[in-house]
Length: 141
Image (cartoon, rainbow, N blue to C red; front, side, top):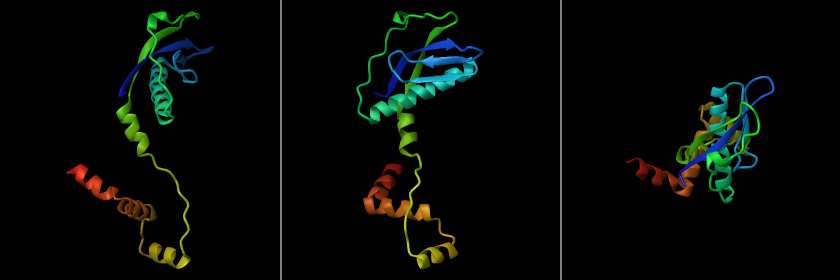
């Protein structure tokens, strides 16, 4: 599914701000020092939580009807938060990870003397070896 909308429970903090939970998604919790920050954090938490569930192939529950969620604390409220997953999937699929590799010193010295970007060369070589460089070129045309 590409678009999810879940009710979020905003509860006022002890001093200021809000704690945000998603009753349908145990463990999906965040907070913000203001309503604006709490809304922003709620969207981010929902997107990351759902992405993790998708990545783990966990079943994603149907969202509750907002009016069916009890509000026990004064000043608390329910609002709907939307997660549009194609953008999140693309962003997380392209996140950078650090790899450690070993090469001979002479090769390292020669490459550094030519100001070669090791990451760029490795990415290019891996794409070529896996045949994804050609696929990416075809997609961009």
